[in-house]
Length: 352
Image 1: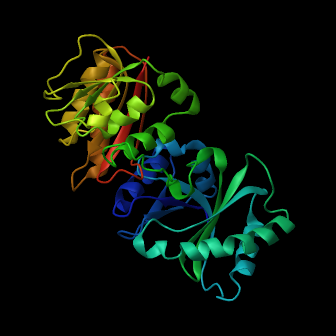
Image 2: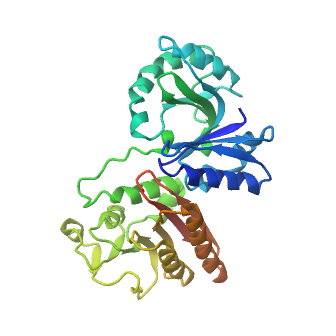
């Protein structure tokens, strides 16, 4: 089909479409996006022969902000017989470029599509058996993943993607358990950011017991809890109250002050921030912390406006990058609209 299928949060299809179009245009490729409002996915059709495969090679999933996961399309299977969906799917999968090492049956992340998840579970084994018999699905630790995304009971997008250039979670949705000790569900946002945006090496090296961190806008302590659970010492900045259980750990110092005015007396390892404020103002604050050397690493959220959300994110990221560059520092920056985010984007920056 010379096309890509991209999963995104329902309601952010236009941002996902604009982003993949920009990625293609930067590489001299043209195409068009098919995006239905609140569908939870985008299909990007390329004009140039082989351009979809080239995009999948040259663009890393970590570079995409609004796409949770993606795959190269082989076909849209319509009118699959209710009594035999497997035969049609296996026939399409004969077009795989190589044997796959993983099979995922999926749906877009919408309330309507979630009703199809029982169908996905019931079809997995009946589909996997003939794929294994025909050596289209083999046991291996790498290679490609087969993706079958059902739109309804008789229709599915079918494709594949290299396992090393996709989300580690089906549809880009992590199954994280809410820790009972955490004071708010916002804790899952920071947990997902650490697990999904940092490499395994970075997780080991950048989160070590005894490191110092600052949490701006900490109340009631969901993000502080994630840091404390990893053994970090935290200065929690918020005029509101911090959960008593977190304070009892002895690893937290709570200062009742404005997060925009607080400055550390000495540099810290980490800064995290989930303040509800205009995104450009938060970006400017984060840029100051990083450029001035007040912290080495940061994870923060940008709360998005109702309109021109993609443009606003780019504006904020450009501001942070420019300020760090002007300070003569090297850095690594990643941004993502996480599953546990809502009208926001999470950014990770580490400065050398």
